[in-house]
Image (cartoon, rainbow, N blue to C red; front, side, top):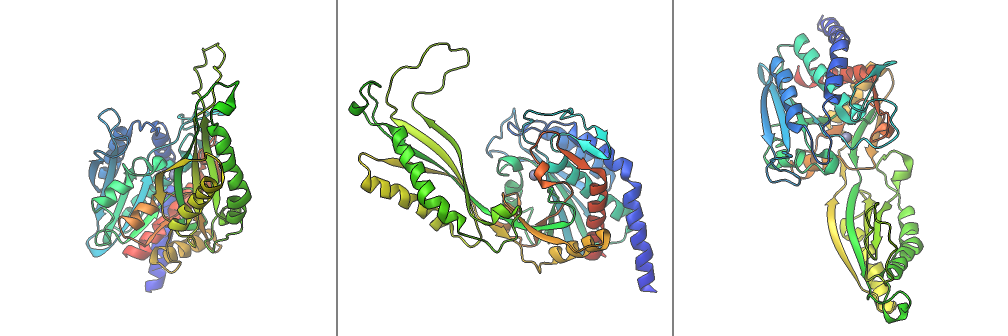
Length: 431
Ligand SMILES: [Zn+2]
């Protein structure tokens, strides 16, 4: 009897999600139409107020929290976040859905209005559609469908909309974690609806190390370079050492983390930028350059590392190359300034939230879930390191490769399927 009652309730829940299709579309469009560009961090207050009205209507208690003093926060560009909580009728676990509200710059190549939220052929277009306003909308619909079907539940549901994920999350999840919002005594399960595809559970991400390297020289007349010392040539030696030693070493390292795409299962390093010699002039400058030997050259490196690697070794091998040049190359000197470090994060495959979401994926989509890890970092790092909460995954609709691209979109069917998975997970954990 209990089993057949469960089955009827489950089909009611799935129907409750499907019935909210128009609402889901409108909600996603509304969110896309607020251009929450980061940088500089536009319209954070507006999107939080919008979510505030929406979630209070659904019975949530809400808090708007400004991350005072975090990078980028100012009265002109305040870092606003919202945390909404709806408690059940008795004690139990809390399931928290965390979405970032910021989007990256538009870039070139769009054929759709990036903030129009156009619906065409079952897809909603716009900057942030898949990364990750579609995921935010799906989690809200999942929670509302669950609340309508199971008014009597244990524990609590939380939904947060947070700032600045695209620039490190310091004015968003990191700030909330520092202020106890991800304390394991308050929250037990975290789902981040990033666009990892509706049939995948994302367990975590690789680490990242960002640093600026500067080589030095001595300025002189360009016609007599032997009277100076060329910092760009010294940097050339650095890049050469990277090519000969570091890149082959990194390519030979492989991780057991299920990182997608496949190429990111090795260590990688991008060289973000290079600047040497006199600064570039404005476009309207029509003069010729002066003739100087450059006395400084700088690069920014973006080194992504694996759970099997140690951050001290990652730093150490770059330093060793630079020190080797210093010992062997005439007049070589350098400075290395570390800009940021993020350690790898991996949730255990047996963790409760992983198991529950995987089982719901199989139920809704009729095939086993795929377990993946992300090549880049996302807000799980703060929930793990600052919040000390390990039971955290990314799961949400959308195609990862569309993130940050022109004509970014989210499929309506994908949002509905993933909302069903999220709603089903609420049933498993809270009833
Ligand atoms: Zn994202």
